[in-house]
Image 1 (cartoon, rainbow, N blue to C red):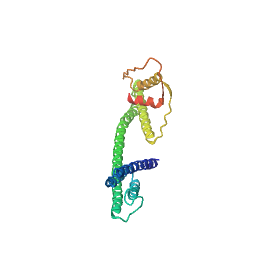
Image 2: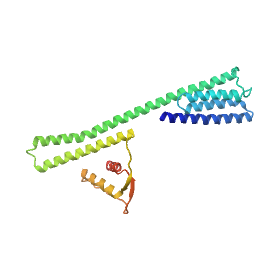
Image 3: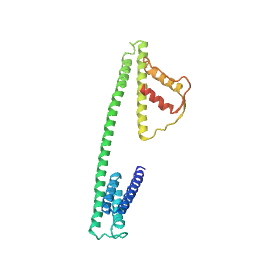
Image 4: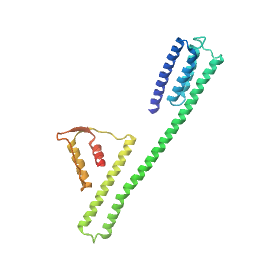
Length: 248
C-alpha cells in the first residue's frame, strides 16, 4: 500500500512539474527567447528527480523532456532530429542530471531511514531499561515479603501478616497494570487496538478512576472538579480510565 501511494504521488508530481515546464517553454518560445527552453527543462527534470523516489520518474521525465525539446522547441519544429550534436548533448545532460539526482536523493533517504531506525532502537532500549527498573522494585518487595511470611510465619502477629499480604497484593496489582500498559503499547504499535466508543457519563468514569487510585494510594489527596450538570462523552471508557490512572 505504501509503495502504491508513493508511485501515485510520484506520477502526479512528475505530470504536474512536466506540464508546467512545457507551458513555460511555450511561453518562452512565444516571447522569442528559446535559448532558455533547455534550461527550464533541465530544472524540471532536476525537481522531478529530487521530489520522487528512485530513478524511474527522473529518467522518464528526462526522456520526455529530451523528446519535447527536440520535437516542439528545436528547429526543424515538430520533427525528431537526434543527429545534431546539440540535441544529443541536451538529451545526455537531461539523463545525467536525472541519474545523478536520483542517486543522491536515494542515498540521502536511505541514510535518513537508517538514522530513524537507530533512533527507534535507542528508544526501545531506553524503554526496556526503564521497564526493567520499574518491574524490579515491586518484584523485590514481593520476594522479600513472601520470604518473611515463610520464614517468620509463626512469630508474626496476624495484623502484621495481613499487612504484608496486602502489600503483596498491591504490588501484584501494580505489576498487572504495568504489563497491561506494555501490551497496550504493543497493540498500538501493531495497529491492533480497536477504539470502541460508547456514550459514557463523566461522573461515573471519574468515580471509577478515583476508587481504583485510592486503593493504591490511600494517603494521596486528589481534588476533583467536574461540571455539576450531567456530561455524556462518546469514548472508549476502558482506555480512557487507564490513561487517567496512569496520569494520576
